Length: 188
Image 1: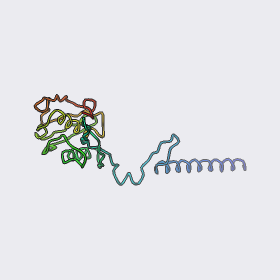
Image 2: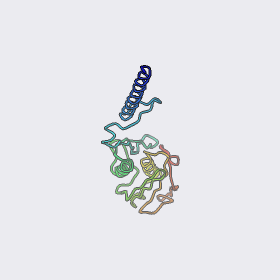
Image 3: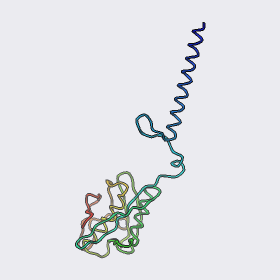
Image 4: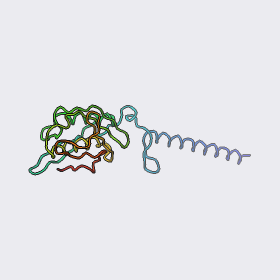
């Protein structure tokens, strides 16, 4: 009878040990502690309170002696799509000191939509105004690279006053729809 009582006590002890171990593992996972495979799980208190910031870049033009280059300037936003829309609006403002923009003054962002693969940017008619081929390449490059800063592989559809365009300017810069970063040079 004494052996049966000892086995019963050992069984209870092992059951409690397993229960405590499982509870401890659960608590560690909830607090972002590493799991046996090295990853972390669970939510930290700060991620439940504030959304994660996404970094987007606005592409401005930098001039050198013989060429132009689109250069990213990182900005922060709160939500991916909102951050991209805010960055596109900022792109249509004056560039910071030391940079230029190929986008004509007065160009406005009429609307912007994005999904996992496609980005649609609708700008005002001023986007067509003025400049030579370098200016036109620059403005399209700035717009496409800024719009795809969170998803560099996304397709960009450029619309002017709601209409897709096939060419830009008097020299007829061909605009392929959709455009990707692979279609446009950073240096021109």
